[in-house]
Amino acid sequence: MKAIYQAKYGPPESLQFREIEKPVPKAREVLIKVYASTVNRTDCGWLRGKPVFVRIVTGIPVPKNKVTGTEFAGEIEKVGKGVKIFKPGEKVFGLNEFKLGSHAEYMVMSEDGPIAAIPANTSYAEAAPICEGAYYALCDIRAAHIQKGQKVLVNGASGGIGSAAVQLAVYFGAEVTAVCGTKNLGLMKSLGATEVIDYTCQDFTKSNQKYDLVFDAVGKSSFRKCKPILKKRGIYISTELGYMGQNPILALITPLFGNKKVQFPIPAIRKKDVEFLKTLVEEGKYKPVTDRVYPFEQLIEAFRYVETGEKTGNVVIQFNHV
Image (cartoon, rainbow, N blue to C red; front, top):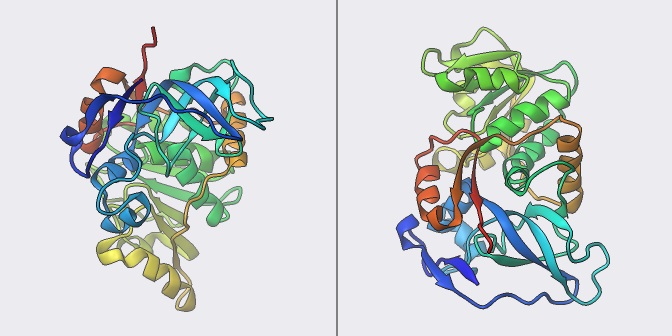
């Protein structure tokens, strides 16, 4: 089968297209014919092995999983012994964050993993980007215990995580202020934001508004800068470690001093999270934003584009199976 192969850590140019052996599902595993995948921030981090400590998980000194790709949508072709949840012919989607493998024509997944049937009336290309950004956003919003009527600011609201965070915060009843560039102001309104700040014209940290949660979906601000716009008992969450890895440390210290704090939840996706996101899609409460769709043959170019940091929402990879 055709696959994108990562022999070492490095830039997109280090990736190679190869013919490799088609995987065989083990007990309680399913073989999926991949029709769509994505390239996201997680993929780019795994590609370069950055931050360096992630190599404890991904492999030292070289990647232990040679086929890249986390998100997927496809059709189950074969099931291993003892599989009870799925059967051949079913359309599925999900996330394989640590074992990877979705940048190939076929991949295997545990039937008990973060995988579910594709939402009704959803194409493969629409289903593939459902999980990655949304699960990071969902983890952080749940950790902050956002309730109806609270005020949430999302910085980097036009990215894969940010655009999901806006929709999920709205779903949980929050009043959302979205921070993004000029071209995406209308998009944020369409996703449910009650207020939109154009970061090219205004510094959101100088706002007169106060927020229950500031969610920095791109890690370009800091608790120090955002503290003045937090309410009493307000929370700052970033998707990045922060300068010199300060955010995990601040998450331990700030609850002990003062009335505003940092949280740094450790994300972990489960099957029930995928099922939850599926339900939201079917109910029209959440729809992943797609920027570009690349054919599988241009996957390396897709990595280059995502690494520019200029994408809006998600970048989808489409397979053209014969």
